[in-house]
Image 1: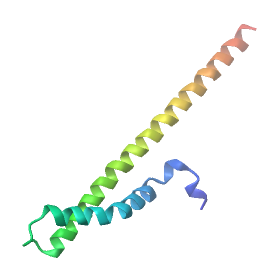
Image 2: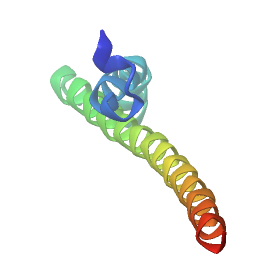
Image 3: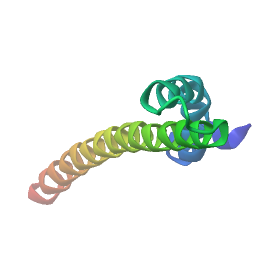
Image 4: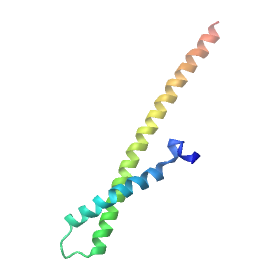
Amino acid sequence: MKWLKDIESVGWVFWAVVFALLLAPGIWLAYKLTYDTASVLLRLGCGIFLAAIASGLISWLVEEVIHRRNVRRYNARRKVERKEKKRKKKK
């Protein structure tokens, strides 16, 4: 499972895990929000839809935090490299 070590390539895996975790609460919420006359397939579909949307939002937020952290690290590393390069140039 070498590909799991690269945190930037596990977005869909993370989404699937969060989707599986939110599936039961999504279906429960769909049952609470719909009328009693609504069909079971409609309720299940709404629950699946709610879980997919919520897991997409959560996955997007986590990926954004990871991306910004990586950009900040990259910029800090580049800044140190530029300072070292200037220092070597002066000597």
